[in-house]
Image (cartoon, rainbow over all chains, first blue to last red; front, side, top):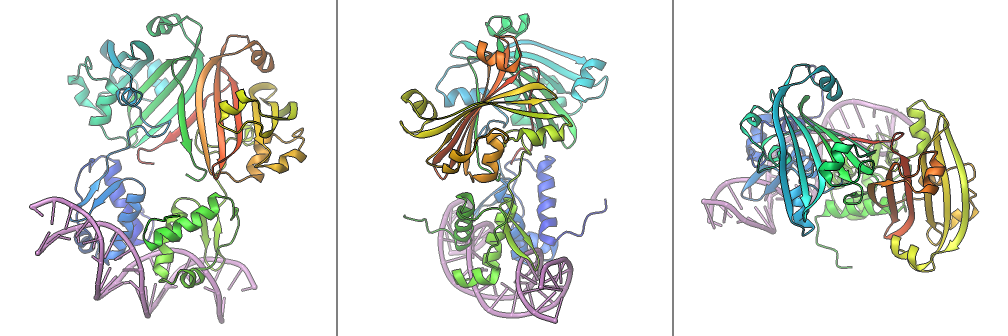
Length: 238
Length: 238
DNA sequence: TAGTGGTCTAGACCACCGC
DNA sequence: CGGTGGTCTAGACCACTAG
C-alpha cells in the first residue's frame, strides 16, 4: 500500500475521489457533512472544506447549502472526446433520431479479438452491431463488445430499444477511456450498412472504457465522411 | 464592466488567470509573493493562498519555496487535441522528421476565405503551404493562415526552416482553440502532395486559434489514412 | 428556521532551498 | 540564514434553502 505522507487535505480528497471513481459512491450519493468529516479525520473544518472544494472544482461533487454534498452526474457530451449519446446529440441538433439493433450475440473472445482489445482469452462478452440515424440517414455504425464479467447485468438486456451506449452510461461507472480516431475507406459491408459507396472515406473512432483497470467495453464507430464531423473547443492549460 | 460580486478568492484567481491567458504574463514570469498580494487585495494570506492553489491545480502556475510563484509552461502535446508539434511527436516516436515549405505568400483575405474562418474581409494574412514527413513519408499537409494584424512579427519570418506551428507556439500566446475532425477523400492536389492515390481517405483536422477573441491562425491538416491516427486518453470528470 | 455550505481571518509552525 | 510557500487551526459571520 505504502501511501505517501501526503497532506491531510490531499488524503481526504483522494479518499473521496477514489470512492467515486471506483463507483462505490454513485452519482447522486449524499456525502457526510463537513462536521462529520471533521470528526472522521480529526481535523479543522477548513481542511475538510479545502478537500471538498477541490473535488467540486474537478467536477466530481456538487454542493447545495442546507441540502448537502452530492456526487455529481458525469458530463454527457460537452467536448469532442467525451462519451457520446447519439439521442442527446440529435435532440441538440433538432433532428429525428432512429436506433436499429442489427445483431446481438453472446460469445467468448477468440485470441484475435482478445489481443486486439487487451482483454483475456475466453472472456464472455455481448457482441452488438447497431446503427444510428438522424432524419433517416445513417450517421454511425456501431460495433460493440461488453465484458460480461464486469457488467453481468448486460446479459439480461436485449438492446432492441435502448442503444448500448446509452444503457452503459446510465448503469455502469467508468474511470478511464482511450480513443483512437482515424480515416479509413469503407469496406463493402460497412458501406452497405451506412448506405454509402464502398471505398469512400469513413471517420472511425474506437474507444475502450475501463472501470478501475478492468475493461468494460470496446466500441468501434464508423461515420460516413459527409455526414459527420467531430468538434471541440478548448483552452491551453486544461 | 459589471463584474459579478464574486468571492474575493475568485476575483484574485480570475485576475491572475486573465493576465496569463491574454499573454500579459508569459511562461516563466514571476508573480508577486503572497505577502504582496495580501497587501494588494487587502486580505488574509489564506485567501490569496486559495486563489493561487486553484491556479496551480489548473496548471497555470508552479510554485517553489523560497523561489516564488511562476507562470507555468503550457503542456506541449499530452492529449489528442492539444496543439501539436510534429518535430516533438517524431522525436517521441523515434522517427526522422522532415519539414518542407512549399509556398509562402502575403495577401488580403477575399470574401470567401474571410467568411469561412470568421475573420474580417481584407485582413492581411500570411498564407503558408507546407509538408511534414516522418522517415521520408509525408504524414501531413498543412495549409495555414496567420493574421498579420495580430501577429505582425510573422511578416519577418520566412518559415523556410522552422514550421509555422512551432514558431507560433513559441512566439504567440493563445487563449482558445476550436477543432473540427472529419474524413474526406483526397483531392488530386492533396493526394499528389501526400504521395497517395487520389480519392483515398484522408483524416482532416481544422483548427482555429484565438488570442483574447482575436483570431490568430487557421490551419487545415490533411493526414493520409494509413499513416496517421489521433489518440487520447481521459477520465470521466475532467 | 435551523442545518448546511461559503467565505474569510489572524495566527501559527514547518519545510524547503536560494543566497 | 531568512524568505518563501505549505499546511493547519479555531473561530466567526453570512447566505441559501429544504423541510
